[in-house]
Length: 273
Image (cartoon, rainbow, N blue to C red; front, side, top):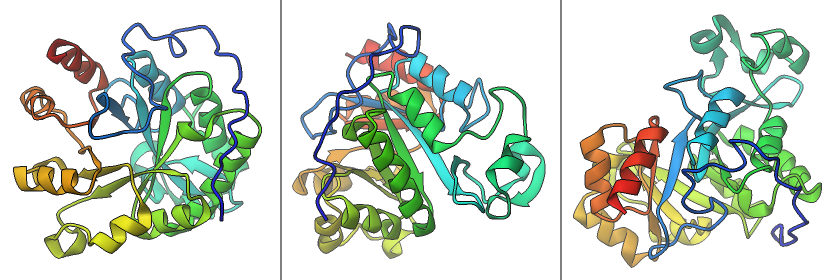
């Protein structure tokens, strides 16, 4: 199927810290390229100062100048796409029930004010007021279709531009995104347990057509940097929180980095520049 090639006029930016960050260096809507600018990616918002995957944490990451904000999605019983990493609400919300057994009305009663489980649609409204992008992480193909529908509706309504939605997660989930949208932005994540410890096969790279390869940071050896370059991809890695490791990877020319400490990464990338 053809991609979302239309780019409707985006809403006028809302003035405020999240819309105009003094620490912003480049736009998250620009695609990652091997020779392009560095992109900072805030992992689940700003989980150091706020609860992960909540609107306050996302606002804080945007205030810090994150080029992209990574979030996790799940789907509720009534097909609402929400921000949540775990299958249950126990770790973050002290509720052992699985997200798939709850509907949106029930979720609205958990937490208070901004400290609630936001929907993907609400989050896109926030992102659309900025020049950052949202990195949507899916750990199952079950979340791909509903998430893509929310994003498609947001693009068509002019809430975001197509380049403000970026996808990552499991290969089977990304495959569904690519099949539905040949222009979708994909960052291909990988860890030591994937592929039996081997790098992805060339046919997988061709099928998914990602703009960047995103391995767990210990995998970024010189050999892997070379493999990334040979495939014409940008380099990214997750999840880097140590100062010296951030500095080392910046010095080695990584194109993007995912961190829980977005404020510190912004300080170091400015110093490194």
